[in-house]
Length: 87
Image (tube, rainbow, N blue to C red; front, top):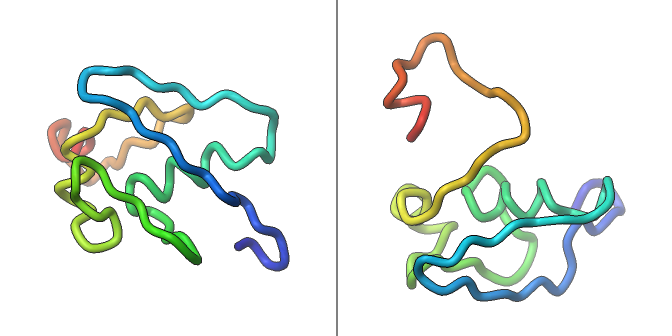
């Protein structure tokens, strides 16, 4: 929720091992919010997210290692080395 706005509602999908999945949609459709929940940067207000059986809210680090994400912005942190920026 962002104020009174529900950013993502009723999303359910499965991606099999080795598949590539992309999020397409207009501005404000909830793409970034969904990715943020998958990576543990945001928590869903209800429901749960699991990646290969690892709940993102409880085991975000393991879940992050099981997926690859290409962000739309360049978000490198100067205080981190290359490896840590990729993790």
